[in-house]
Amino acid sequence: MRQRYFSWTRLVLLVAVVLPGACLALPTQAAEPARRPNVVVFLTDDQGWGDLGLNGNRDLQTPNIDSLARDGAMFERFFVCPVCSPTRAEFLTGRYHPRGGVYSTSSGGERLDAQAETLAERFQQAGYATAAFGKWHNGMQHPYHPNARGFDTYYGFCSGHWGNYYSPLLEENGRLVKGDGFLIDDFTDHAIQFIEEHRDQPFLVYLPYNTPHAPMQVPDKFWNRFADRQLTMLHHEPEKQDVPHTRAALAMCENIDWNVGRVLAKLEELKLADNTIVVYFHDNGPNGWRFNDGMKGRKGATDEGGVRSPLLVRWPGRIASGTKIAPIASVTDLLPTLTDLTGIPGKPAQPLDGVSLKPLLLAAPDQAASTAAAWPDRKIFSHWSGRVSVRTQRFRLDHKGLLYDMQADPGQQHDVTATWPAEQAALAKAAAAWKEELLTGLGEQDWPFPIGYGGAKYTQLPARDAETTGGIERSNRHPNCTYFLNWTSVDDRITWDVEATPGRYAVEVLYACPAADVGSVIELRLGDQAVQTQITEAHDPPLHGEENDRVPRPESYVKDFKPLSLGVLELSSGRGQLTLRALKIPGRQAMEMRLLMLTRLLDDQP
Image (cartoon, rainbow, N blue to C red):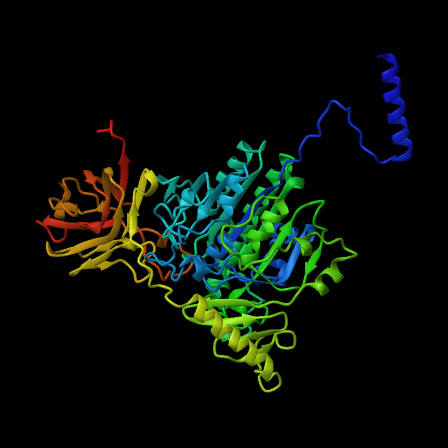
């Protein structure tokens, strides 16, 4: 035994001499498997390319976001969609949003096909703890809800925009809750808590912030730095610019930066920074005419200014500091890139439109130029509301068929079709083929709103998703955060096209009603099953939101609606019109209505 020990010792010494860098373990010890890296993804809402210090805007300071470019990689030409929900769908699936059935930003058109596999599902299956905190905007009911798309934990709101950013109505894993303070700060608090609780296992944290989307609300400590500031960085057509709106947007961007810094500091504190991939990007161009590096277009446009976003990726020790990546890239590339970087096994369930950017990100500094030069050119398509543009490394074909040389003319001022007729013809043909393949039938899918899908405990049916008859009015033309009012007749109806999973459901309606109108009898019916109740308690809260707005808003103000029990509705399987009506209206109106909440009951519950 002693002789064996000396033999092993001599072997160790021999290897150490021959291979001085070798790392040896005792033969009885198995190498500990490397833990997969964590991933934190920041996605901001309506923040433009020019709304960051790193992109040349001297009117604001974004040191924490800028540090991601300094300490990691920055893509110079990264493209998202012109509006919110399509970008989110493409990030989640690695596929163009029409493939997932997303055609609108509200009223069901924002829902991502339940059959589409998501990034979070891939990570969840690989053993990651997964969470999302913020604006979801790809469906509210299961199977579209984030908890049904691979996120173990969700806190935020599923709608497209929200009417108040200070302690508003939110949801936590489907259950209605009240927020705590300014939304972006609140979402960040929850993300930090999740990171602390899951520090000992790999995690995916998705932070889809909802600012600087309107309403333009931001805490005083950020607004006060901008309230009277003389702006020096203006839109290239300054007559279009709304300066007060810009001040509010930039203040909101500085708040975002502060919250990004809080997450980065927590990763450092927990000694997780070196094993965490941090990603930062925006969902579309700016929500106003403001400095955007001279690009054409803003939110909603398929031109460069409507779809160009920063993409910053930091992974200390793996991605070289200060890396700048010139090849064009797309939001569809993030799923294959992140699964590739983290070593998530398996192949995607559906063919992807995106490609892994790992070779560009991990190229050694002395090989980065050659890697980029060898990167194949590609076509990236941008679509919204039937308008399609196509981007290659050099050219952009706009939705009217005009061709621009983006290297010589980044502001899209001069059509170069006459100089490059073959290039224009090829891109026009590609755009036509893309439209034929992806847009045919888009928006025509027949998707009712599910109740209790897959045994889900909670189903929200907001006013946003309902249709009305008679004189009932929506509180605003932008439906996402609206409620119904002017319900004055027993002939009026509020209906949802639903598909029910059998079960017993406790039903509540979030309502408001002044004292003079108390007494209405309300019925909810699906087929031959109905529940009804009488409003016996006044609830007449004031409209709010305006007191926190820095500039006037286009969306609806909101109220603090109160839950009213309608009883227990027993549903059988099937599709039908879930109908809310008033059987009696003794006052001027039945009530004002925000949403229905159906809670699935177990057999032994009352």
